[in-house]
Image 1 (cartoon, rainbow, N blue to C red):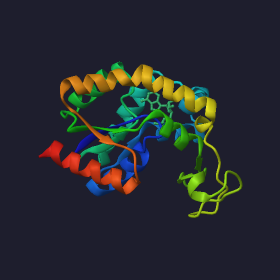
Image 2: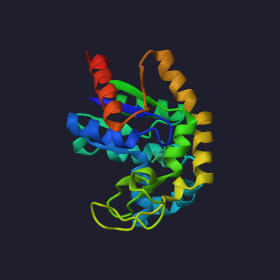
Image 3: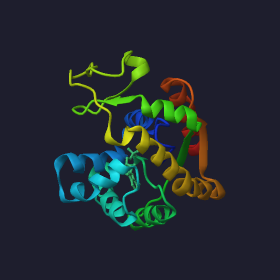
Image 4: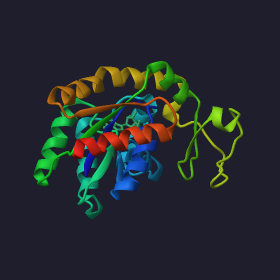
Length: 217
Ligand code: AMP
């Protein structure tokens, strides 16, 4: 099962992709996470993308396709993957098609989690992350904005650089300008299946799994 999960920043792509990947027994491939990992490790790529990530702009298509090629070549991706955060531009759509074709495969499903902008802003600006185990919380859920610790590993929660208010606004703008055309493309192709991303994570998950079943059936 080779699936792409689309959606604006804060739509819940990460949360849902992890669950879908676990249920389908395929890896969750998040390009944002691969980049953040590279920054944390201080690799050559990490040093090159650090500022772009913090600004909310997109990393170049050329760098992204190299990163993705390397990740999809791992044996764990042989039986499929849940791809989260890619493609984000029309060039990346082409690159992904070419990459999969060179591996003798193609996408099975493209799922979109749709959430209105005001809900996204609320979710993102209240988001807190554990810098150690990456678990994500919302201030509404933890009942305070500062000083909370991760309930799994006890590390102090922080605001991810790209969840700062000005960056959030930029990420939404970038999404509308550069990623909307990707959705239009998949929509025209007839391969985009959309779910309402409002409600609890369980509700959204149920919508996604029934849609994915339809896409495969
Ligand atoms: P995400 O966690 O998917 O929201 O990604 C976080 C940041 O990583 C984005 O704001 C971009 O700066 C960068 N990024 C992730 N995926 C891509 C991509 N496919 N193309 C360009 N930049 C990306």
